[in-house]
Length: 247
Image 1: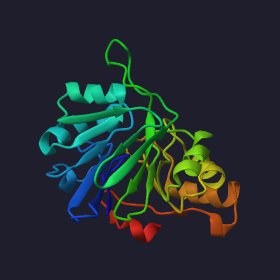
Image 2 (image 1 turned 45 degrees about the vertical axis):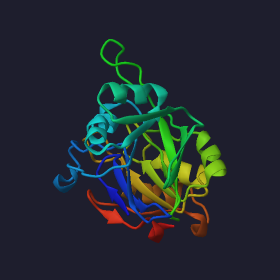
Image 3 (image 1 turned 180 degrees about the horizontal axis):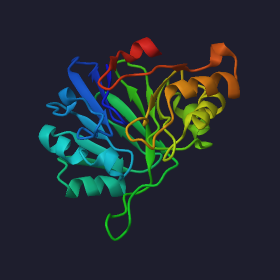
């Protein structure tokens, strides 16, 4: 089960395949953010927390969530160590090309085209921004969370190497891809993606790109055979969907 917590924040519920115990993975949990539903702000269970980069709207709430649940925080070496100094219960630092594996998932750290931290006199260096491909051992379809990113040629490598099926990708523009760039990525680079869930839009007035604009771009500006076109699945804040229905 995938829950959109607003912005770039997601909760994914799956099972450990041997015991069928419930497992929960968070990506960029911004539980204090303006688009996170009130019902989702307090989480009692987390096993893994993936953070994509050092901007506050992606990692600020990760240490507290880790403290409360004992979850391991996965990020770049630099960012993981920052999370530890801020109280994370466990960390796993790696870099692009690195792999994290446990009893229910395999996580590949991949490239993202963005910045990663604030001014040096205020914020420590948090490493490069990244994305993640997550494969689930219970058969849940694999996902590619792009993090904050522009379209880039490395997306072709990501889809060739890891073959993700569902994309969680930014569309708001200004600080990430907008609709035109995302349409290009889906039609020209991310051939394995069957369904895209737009994210990182509408959280602030500056993020003006929308899924509706993406639909126009993907059909008209960069057309491909409709049978090969990724489906656009728009979620509401707090909305849930079974990933198996999107594969």
